Length: 378
Image 1 (cartoon, rainbow, N blue to C red):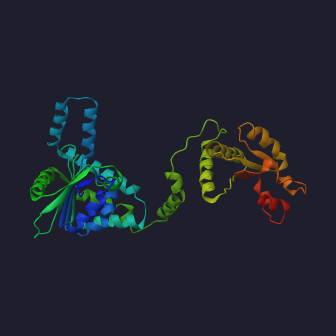
Image 2 (image 1 turned 60 degrees about the vertical axis):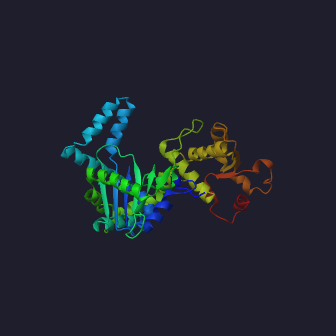
């Protein structure tokens, strides 16, 4: 049966908002927070409305009220604080705007430096310059309500429609979170919601200038790219996966590793999974053997993979006694020279059914015209 419930499960808020923006002449959004991801989700449809008024909440007052509530202060204390917000002095109002501007700056800094996100920022600037986007910060207390009010063009029986509920103007609120919103029909309801919005709008602080300042100084509006900024962007893309991957704590049963060695293990794991092979290389004394051992230990414990270790003959005893046995790697150790022996039994069971081959001193295999290279390949 048809219904007006939007829960981001069967029906999604971003679909409803985009559809209504395509029909509306103007829109008025009241939300708790300003998220660029929310604008990004509906950006193409914003060009179709003559005016969008965005009323956002005051983060500072929200946190203070929650702290009062968490400390079990009386209801009178919370109400007294909320009343005090209605009589803020100039400095207090400046602080509210400064905090909101700082939040915008932080979110702009987290945007990916892509053409799509750059165009999003530039679109917001165009809308602000044309005075088609107007933004205010509600400083009179916590703005917990979320309302999306749409005005239809003149000539229609319905003057507008609205959606009220739990969703902020964010990608999560529009699409991913489990939310509960309802479509509100009827001219009487539309008029009452308009009245409610207008009262809050008049009490709020203009924010367009602060928003515009943050947008204009952001990377997206900076036409001149310095060599240093180009270097940072390249560095970011080269290290993006490492920066964004969840932290992996060093397990207690691993060989002892310094922080830089553990970082090398995580990097090696990432490369190994992507390319089915990895080089661990560094100057003498920085612990390549322990890094490799920790890599094998991780793969044994976490993924039940066992390894064949091939190394020069002088290192066989070291690998077996000080590494494999000590740290219970469950690996077989083979002398590199054995690969050249004509009677070498490559088919022996202990060399078969291995998931990994670790080759120590791999530069010994840099020439392909040797028998041991051919056997290693097999």
